[in-house]
Amino acid sequence: MNIVEGRLNKRTFPYVLYHRRYYPIIPVVIEGRERSVVHALVDSGATVSLFHTSIAEDAGIDLKDTDQVYLAGIGGYVRAHIKRQVKASIEGLGNINIPIAFTEYITSDIAILGRQGFFEAFEITFREWEKKLIIRRRNRLIY
Image (cartoon, rainbow, N blue to C red; front, side):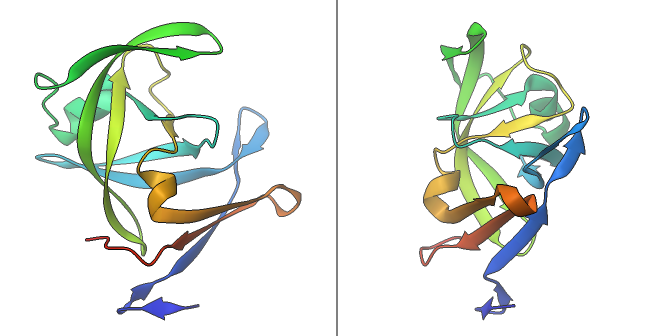
């Protein structure tokens, strides 16, 4: 394993069996007044991360100062509240601030980790043939 500044530089995550199929799902810690662990699907087709509003409540994230938007997806439009800077971390890879759209119109047991903020901070490699996801920290400031 590569070590950078005393921390892991790269993590490999096995795909997770979810509803009888394997997906690139990883644990992510979201921080507000509290910390909340979320299982998130790493989705290169999603522009922004999408989490259920209960996750914001669990983490103590106030959604009163957010922008209300309507996001388009395969199933149509969903109303969401975008929090522009949410502290998120992946074990061994450091903390980042990413925008997260919180909505009640998504299943509460899985979140979607989209490109904005996340794909900019890490090199993401999907190895479908091995059912593995490799995340490598880029050489940029991650606090």
